[in-house]
Length: 220
Ligand SMILES: N[C@@H](CCC(=O)N[C@@H](CS)C(=O)NCC(=O)O)C(=O)O
Image (cartoon, rainbow, N blue to C red; front, side, top):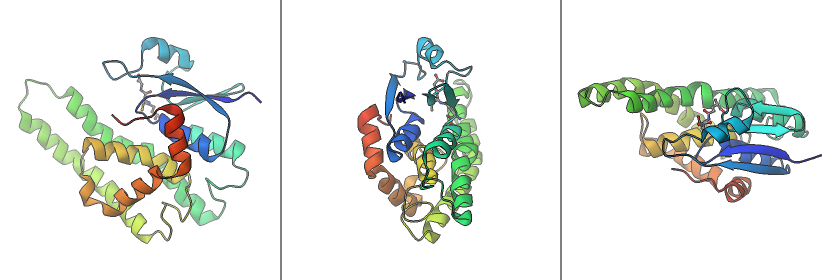
């Protein structure tokens, strides 16, 4: 079997897939793209991804080309996680893992990126209080999301989102939470001590550290 190719963009969700590939001990090559001055990948690199969206992460596994970090996660687990370690087979644990897998994009990214776009696109000549009011309104969603996350970590018996071992829940959620904390999108890290501890625990995992080393991932 030729190795899987991971189309990886610096400082992006691509770290989720690299971490997962390491958790699954799969052989993979990294096709690395850097961000240009405008924060995007170059047009050439986006074209080279070979999908209609040209987004990162995308993987190539034989004839299969998969985009969307959540779909990639599900695809890799269904195909390679024969022991159901990353998506547990216990029904209650499986539901929890799938909730987080989807919440990473459909809830946390949705609400926090609304603030990023407001910061990008709010007219420079408009009064600054207008943007502050928009952010304050949109922060309510983010605060609500973190209330859920902190509450689940308080109830969790292990150190991770679904018990004592890493699952897709942690692999999908870590990047977005780190992003929200670093950019202070609608909340501040000191409000969520359990979440901060969990984030550190994720980033101390050997597989996560291997993924960072192999890809050169940095947060910026
Ligand atoms: N929902 C998608 C989002 C993919 C996405 O927007 N990726 C960003 C990086 S985090 C990207 O490719 N940006 C590069 C560009 O648009 O030039 C996923 O979860 O994979």
